[in-house]
Amino acid sequence: MTTSTNSESETALRQALATGYQRLARLGLNNGSAGNMSCRFGEGALISPTGADGDSIRPEAFVHISLGGDTRGPGIPSSEWSMHTEIYRRYPQAQAVVHTHSDACVALSCQRKPIPAFHYMLAGFGGDDVPCAEYATFGTDALARSAADALDGRNACLLANHGMICHAATIDKAVANAAKLETLARQYWMSAQLGAPVILDAQEMAVVRERYRSYGKARLDTRGPV
Image (cartoon, rainbow, N blue to C red; front, side, top):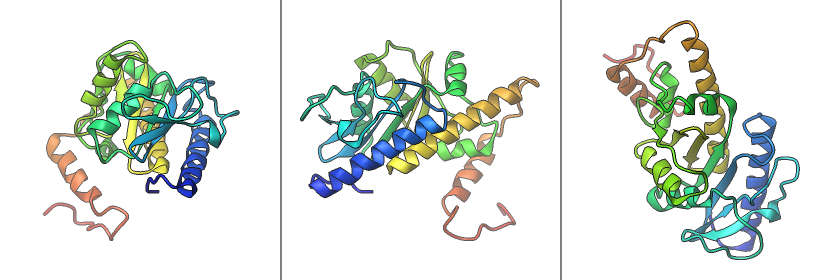
């Protein structure tokens, strides 16, 4: 869904955000008022309000905010608004952002280490791992900068002792990325219980990323690299 400032598009974006926020709760990726989400809108963004939860969120509650942090209309934006706006400023391809406190991502973020290439699907996040941003206090510019730095070349990262954040070209895709990262984080944690997982090397991950270019668009060549 493309962003626009006309009222019809704004209504559709607000509904899509509310639906996405509710889906995060149904999937167990956020509990209570933890986490937040947004989408790019005109020269700014629409972001979930502070204290929002999946049971009570309404389309009209999303707050219109400029990329400089000025609110345009009623409502108080999420305390993590600066993380969202920093990502939109740095990465033009980011059209929607999702931040969660999902269990496996939180658990791994407390180790302050990246998720390595234990599974080829990590290539879908843009590189050979999912990095972990350096710790900073929630709701600060320092955390915003740390998260945006970690997303260089990636579309998802862990946030040390906090959770995860990701961006995508659409609201639906951002929610899907958050769900995929939580699944992979849980699988990595499960594998690590048996010992150190075998990590795919950079060459194999490069092959996977190349194959992803045509994934879902054309029949994959079953011969693999030649």
